[in-house]
Image (cartoon, rainbow, N blue to C red; front, side):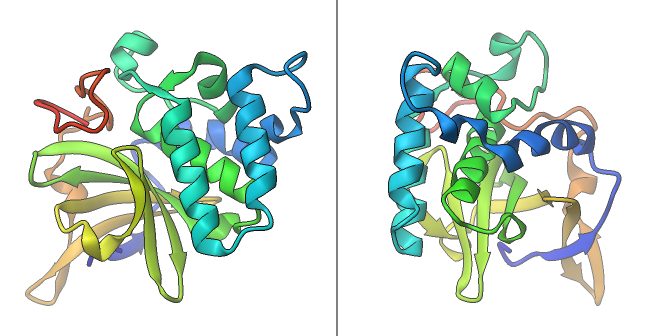
Length: 219
């Protein structure tokens, strides 16, 4: 993925956060919304989108969910949204609030795509560095025998990882598995995560009203 080498690794910075949200990713309770009487409008709209996506071809399914989530959630960094450096929100938490940062978009997309028929073990949350902006970010990757498709809150278009050359993956998580990513140098695998600060947080710094603009200090 993104030209990296992925090595199974358990002690990741966000492992506890992921373990807390993954059970709701599997359940995706928002897809049971049938009326606004028991669900908010965002949950109801996404539930309808998921039901429509179930019968669509693979590429259309990804495109529909990517756009739906990007436009249902207002970007707000965790330090403003939750008054803490990093918070991984459950899908219902993001839908109820109507706001979140980059990993919250990715988590919600994974839940929606799983409910629409994409296997959970083919999807992963990827925490990465945008090397052009020197910023940390998170996206959803859907892996197939045709390559890796990237769903990004900064783009309504679903792209292949090969189209995003500025993205350097640090680590990724999928269902019960996790990996640390690195690059090959002189026959050895060098972990990209080793260059990241211990307290980095994906999603910090982007202006809340400029989701499709290049941020000055953070994604």
